[in-house]
Amino acid sequence: MSPAHAVADETGPRRTEPARGQFRRLNLTMFFPLIAVAGTLTVAMDARSWWEAVVLGAGVAAALVAFTRWTAGEVMRVAVPCLIVTAAVWPFAVLVVGGSAAFSGVASVGSFVIPQLPRHRIAAAAGLAVYVAAVGAARLLVSHGDIPQVLFRYVLFPTGITVVMIGLMFPNKRFYDVVDELEEAREREAELAVIRERVRFAGDLHDIQGHTLHVVKLKTALAQKLVDSDTERAKQELREIHALVSDTITQTKELAYAQRRLNLSAELENARNLFEAAGIKVRVNREADVDQGVSELLGLVLRETTTNILRHAEATRVRITLSASSITIVNDGAQRAPLPELRGLANLRQRVAADGGDLTVEQDNGQFLTAAAFPHRSETRENR
View 1: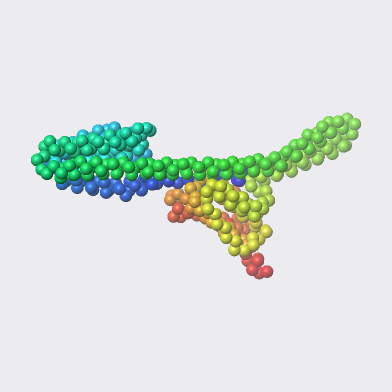
View 2 (view 1 turned 60 degrees about the vertical axis):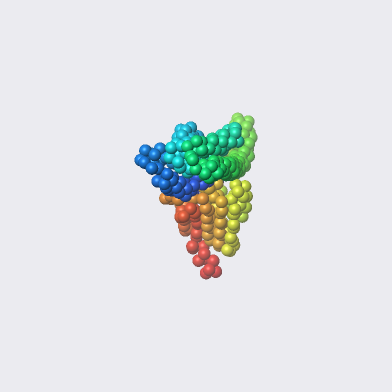
């Protein structure tokens, strides 16, 4: 098992789907049915025969494919075929069917694709708008109706809507870029927080072993000098070396299993600093002074939970509640899935149980709860 305060085990809530994916999935859920229904109604109103319905339906299908791939962040994979299909359907609708709504297909696909281009986005947007306008103007070649009405219906309105759709997608693209940057920054902060924990562990390990190894080195050199001239003194030095090494091994095991005596107040302050560095809001409620008999174990629970949240959750808020004999840590950002199998908290749960306490871990509705309570301590305080 890794050091509990240096490397988190897979005991807390795992990372949930990135925010970018959540937003895009929400768009798919909300707008796909609307686009599908609107496209179907358009085809039903404009098509006069089954083969016209097939051609117009191909434009709607291409727009839906582009939208679906856009929600997955992969629109460029289908950009060319979808643009070709929708761009071909628009002149067919203008010159053959006499419908003016089919521009929405090429406008939609263009609005998904153009903001994703690495360069020449403005030129591409202008080119698409000119194409929509030019195809719409071609209606004058086959129409004998009112020219201003034809221009408005096939040129001005489609071109204006196309420009607006593309224009709206540019800030939308920037929004998702900012979301990605914030997620990357948060991940870096969380990793830095864990690295700081590892450095702290390394410092504790150095404090335990550094001095001991130096003393062992000196005593070993002294025993070597005395082995011939003062055998008893050399034996005494060797016994002291053995005792010192045994004590160091014990302290190292305690450190590795997070069993060194902890200061709950220091752990609480450290947890607050780590969460704030990772952009997580923290609220601490102290309902009573913590019983000194359980302070160390509550500190261990807080340390383990802090590391788990930083490594495995997409938390934005953490609430820590302390009473005389218990601690409760609740964070959001938990996955909406069954509680994962506990591993890292297993040893800690055994320690808590050995002292008459209960360690509770629950996951519900996007929240993760870790709580440790020592009922017998509370009863003892009340009897006093």
